[in-house]
Amino acid sequence: MANSIKEQQDILLKLNIHQLNPMQEEAISVIETTPNTILLSPTGTGKTLAFLLPLIKILDPDDKEVQALILVPSRELAIQIEQVVRNMGSGFKVNAVYGGRPMSKDKIELKHTPSILIGTPGRIADHFSSDRFSRNSIKTLILDEFDKSLEIGFESEMRQIINQLPHVSKRILTSATHSLKVPGFVRLDKPATINYLSDRLVSKLEIKTVISPSKNKLATLLDLIEHLGNQPGIIFCNLRESIEQVSSFLEKNNISHSCFSGGMEQKDRERSLIKFRNGTSQILIATDLASRGLDIPELKFIIHYEVPQAAEEFIHRNGRTARVNSKGIAYVLKWEKEYLPDFIKNSKVSNISKKAIRKPQFWETLFISGGRKDKISKGDIAGLFFKQGKINQDQLGSIELKQDCAFVAVPMAIADELVEKLNNTRLKKKKVRVTIL
Image (tube, rainbow, N blue to C red; front, side, top):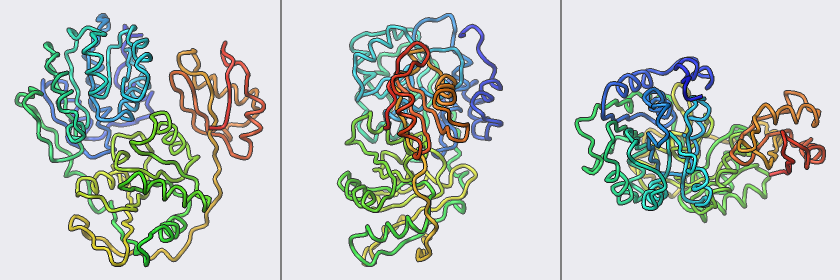
């Protein structure tokens, strides 16, 4: 466990990463030797691992209090970082706390104090005001996607939290944007700045404009999706109402999709992302909330169904494709009489008359009512599906294991049959429900 902390190479092997990228290598070296660091790098370049690897090295396995606090702007980012820490298998306990989940759940988990605590500023401030754990051992403060936290109004909570951390000796700020202004309350004295924002090769991202003859762009959107075939992608909207409108239209046209916006319940948002990640949904229809800080696969395209209000949003949306060393296309859907803002440059008009061959939805997602707290592992779940479900390896898709449940992708053609075989069976010592999500 914590007494035998794994070497970096073992952790990378566990994460199925063969080699760190130059940004990660430089960040690790600087963070290890510098008290204050600003890390600027595009979305999807691996900033999370760049700060977690040096963090794990400086944690004390004998200290039973919270040693590192990671503040994030969104629930999804908190969950994502928590999962990465767990997958690293360092032996250090980690917990994520955030608004939208029961406070009672937080209280139970925090009784077994984690070494690393991740959370949104509002929820962390609540726990601080209730004195649920000691702050005396918190020596490392990480502000991930720091600019986003300020942008969505977390400044007062962050100020309140940081003012109650008397022993912080290492501060790490990350951002995917140049416009980073650090307020004085952060106490970031003479930071070392690692800047890889200009490293991104613009040529890898292609911007194409698709002209809609009608102000109602839904028919043109469908033509574009049919042109792209079965590739996964995100359709960005500015408003929740637009998401509902697009979703209703795609449903009528049998396009598998999920929705993602701040107006949804946290549980529904998480499940939308699970279905998008495992291939049950081909399309994610989202607001700018999905433009960064989400654990989603590499995408070949994104679609601006509605043009964002500002250049920053345009950049972050586009950051969901053409990531690291890959190519990608950002499609801008434009009514023929609509003027595009100045920040959309070098866009070529795209001909989408050619339609790709679309295959029907293949995967379905099954919900299992048992998880990590029941001592259930991914191997246990795979064994259940192979032995009692009698499926082969090719029929078992992605498995996502949570604290109290799990989600498994299986072929849609056998989903009902598997529910019939596996519902109310025993997994480890627990009788579990298995249902279609």
